[in-house]
Image (tube, rainbow, N blue to C red; front, side, top):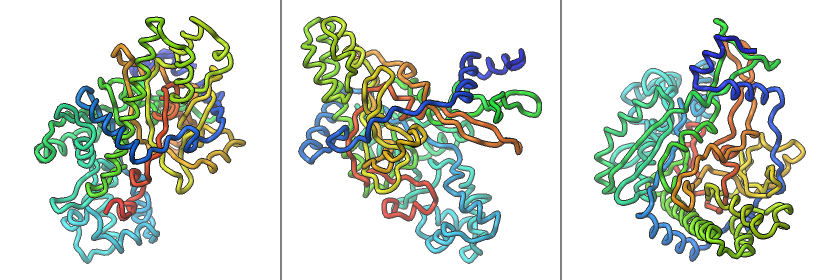
Length: 484
């Protein structure tokens, strides 16, 4: 299947031949669906936190905060093309659409309005205004969301990048420092770096912190091979193989490179202005407080198991009732050392606590109880593509969805960092139809970062309010109350 030239290209790309062969096999065989048992609900896999519990958990996190190395991890997308797709369509067709109509009626309400006036006359026709937004002028059609002006302040407009700086100081600081890691496209690294240098002093003075900002790009060694519709390798005009970025699941490699005790994960566009940040801060601290508490119990039980002092019945109860892992019958019947080792295997994993928002529409992914390969049943975040057609009804029955709101515990009870790559499910993924140079191809994405890439983590779900979820998928989302 592969020539000597192909093998050299594969090696240069940072891939192993067996990895590429496995990817081709995935195209041929497809990916198995998750064994979904039922959707998770409040009282059945999702914890609802009252005010008293929230206050206690926030206090627990704040007590531990100064002893932890904390990082905020922000997947920052490439160009915001999809955010402006309706504007591009209007420029191309000259046909008005609802998004452009809404934009034209409310142009002065956007945070980028003043900047726009520097490039286009106030009385310019709407087509010239739109061209100035996506093309020559603001060039928003080729910039990442993180660098767009989202929110207005008396002191001037802010980008999502800056909102994450502000957020980080509010809940992710430790010993006066804020560590934030952004994953960005190679062509946008300079833009993010330049923006940070221009605003660093302002935000450090305002929040009395020191920022440690780092960035990384998706590694080429996580790319996947493209194939033709008959699953043979897709070749460029010069005969070379085509490799494509494998989706956000590939970012598990970037996450794995971070040296921190606790990592918050939140997408670049899910930000709110300062006057609406209170709920976000509160529930980030709630999630972190729960993680700190559960992790302390896990560490305690691991130490007891090491000393042969553990009450195995008590540990088993903790695993099933607090870690939300229903042990398979084959484990429940074990005794002595065999049971101890089985429980150790469950406890000795990275831990994540995930916020879940009540479903006010059709969810893109949500909280479920799913059966693993070993027969255990645990909490998983599942996308619709992972669910068998006959179980699609479970998606519509789900009461909550996943807003990508995670807090991660990265170390074992000895203080050693986990290798996250050992806790993925390579049997999950997604195959889609794309095109290149007018030719159809099949592309493959790795398990999603918060789906299959974290499938073997211990997982807890907490209900968080919709006020903590304010993504921007299209430009007119910036007109919603949570962005004004």
